[in-house]
Image 1 (cartoon, rainbow, N blue to C red):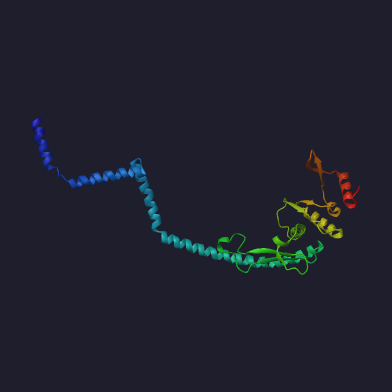
Image 2 (image 1 turned 90 degrees about the vertical axis):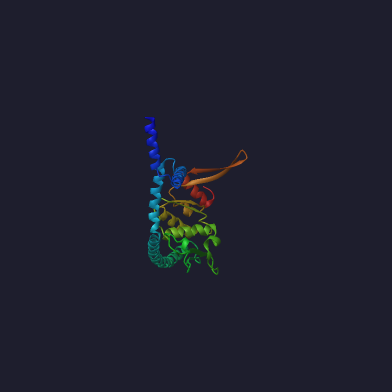
Length: 266
């Protein structure tokens, strides 16, 4: 049996085509597979999953130039549509600015600011593209002058606290487009006014209070008398420290406080 087996093996070995090159290729391929498993594995199935994913990405990138052109065309179309709407908004904004200036002049005159000048300056040049937004392409700044002979300059740099308060009151009076429920706070709004002007300020604030909650710090009885609710602020020294108190007044307390504001005594 052993002799028969040995004879068979010698015959089988003679028929085998031995190729060192093929053996080298197989070993190289096995080494490559091991490297792929180490990088994308650990299992061979993971390598095939990565191959499938990569093939899809290659297919997607194959049409890159066509996709880029389609996106650029879409962007250009939307940019033109945006600019058309923005230019229309700019035209309406310039018209509205003139209307706002006229209305504010009338209201400011009633607030003892007869010589006040308010301007909405819309820049001729549009904002740079990176600053375009849903508000449009306009650069806008408010200019203001309270006294005759003074050139209107940026509002943020020239208006005093009292002037800003009255200007805000005037703006809210002529342009109350906000949703109701907000709180408006006015401080120093009575600076430099009195008599009938103060009465008009009180009437305006009363009108605003129908839509908003209005909080006002004032020393004028003409303004305070229009309020629905009063709080008295006082300071005292306790233990060497200054303490501020806020007291809600009842009906008689309101009458007494307004009387004190009018005459200095109750």
